[in-house]
Image (cartoon, rainbow, N blue to C red):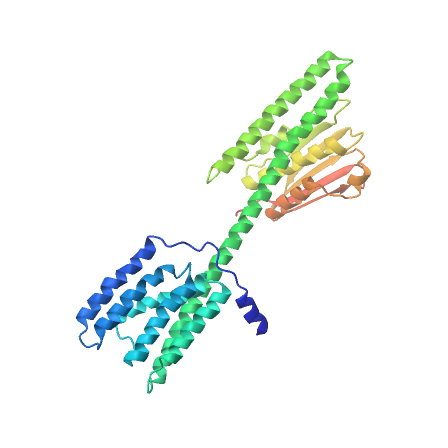
Length: 374
């Protein structure tokens, strides 16, 4: 219990407390309604005094969110004073407008303000208790007060849960964007760097080979710009379509003849026509990242094999190279590329693993469901 009270006392104000706005001014419409009721209720004694009191108190409701405790005191002290002096409760039905105060207190105030505000309500109710008042009436008033507090608290924690959910969505979107940037731009930039090194190596003995490497660099640079434009187009659209997603054709473009400086890439792909578009996109990104890693880290590799096979429920990707990995890679120190690959597969309900192959070289395997929907 002590922990509960300490937690309540330290509770900060709700986030995004709105300032006084136009909709709050609608509360001022209660003033003419109070006067109208006073005119139509001759059965209420001191009705004009009650009407004047309520008309003076209603403006304090405008600050129920930004200054909740002063608003509560501005409402409770005058009404309690009236009841104590006149020896009668407020009988005008329009006094129900004051019920927005306990709701707003639980919805927007800090923990300290909630405790102080409801303490003020409790003291008022004790102070104005009329001798001989039926116990049921007092109990009904307490139930209404608690119900409004619970409603305000429920809306408060619902808004907090929604804000936390949005924060998680933003974090996932940031991670998704980071993976796409790594798997697309980094893929092409890595190829550019490798080809530039090859061009430097062959420039001294063959101008034609150097020109060929420059052509590859130019093509990769164009592809990088195209991928960046696709990413920007997706970010600018509220509902991106599948046109910007990688397709099976991108797998075929991974194939290359290779030469003495770069390993050949051989691609074998089953038809992916009935595979969900997000799954195809993930397979392409995983294959691109695996090929890029092989080109960068697999020493003395002569070939890279990319195979995509289907069974009834699963898409299987296998990327294998026959090179030797440096000690830090073989030891399993994962970079952001491998982390992103595993996250990408996990988001679709699949798996991705990478490591030394028992037959030699390095193998990346992934298994993703053929049918997937968000």
